[in-house]
Length: 410
Ligand code: BMA
Image (cartoon, rainbow, N blue to C red; front, side):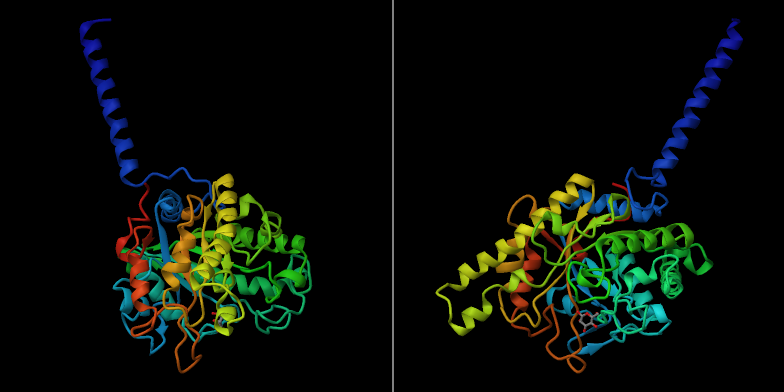
């Protein structure tokens, strides 16, 4: 080969390598698709990143969450910047829970009077500050449009080719529209936003029989078919790609019961658990003086009672490459002023498995005038406020002001 062609060839080789290196650099700068195995292979990059980051930090951190945190508190309603959690602890929660009950029949407000248009703004605000959004759905019974607590059998009737399928699909259509409308980002005004990632937690507490979709009101097989249809419809028919799917049974006796309604690894991203029971152990007996037990003993029994199911959830999540989470809990009114550290934190810190819990979400602080005493986080002046601050200061616990970027690929 003549010298000139050799030089030309080596030059073009160098240019080629340079171009390849630039492309690689560009791809990594754009946050090239992360290697995560989700229910939705077409999930948005931010949704994939959220999963990867939650999985990555779940060993060292438990994110704190609160339902309806920005919408109202015990003594206020829909005030800009409002949050009982922030008022007490100095930071917003890391996880924001919302519920789309009543969205299915086209209402403007949810079942707890939160306006959906405001909910959308609060969801965007929480996400843009770096928080995590999760949505549950106290869905009306599609057979009679009564509430989610109406236990008329419905699950088998809303499956494809069944009598009330169309009524169910109509609800899903409204949900899909809402999920698409959750856009964020600087350019969203020009139509170039991206959808906010959401941990979607439908049909929660299905091991209990209080909702039409759970326990004695369905068969596990019909439940699983409904779950799979729901995922496939939202993902494949409605092109909703900003959801991680959370499965969250209530109190269970063993691994078999935990998995009784599990629709399969291809349909679940987050293995959740709801429990309002374990951490209330012993209070009544202590108050009535019917047991010979110190409050400290009761605390440790309660923490152990919660640690056990949390371990099961973490083990199952590990085995499947999923994320374990304590998706709903709380102690109504928090009548124990040291509940946060002596019970909740103690359970979460029990061992390396319980520490894997990615987040814990406590239920809403209902406005005093609407539902007195129904609150699960402290508000200024509450007897557990100081203890809540101690809980927040623990190195395991993260509020919003102490989060890494969860939406960028690790
Ligand atoms: C329940 C209660 C109800 C509420 C429902 C949905 O646990 O808080 O008052 O309507 O959740 O948020």
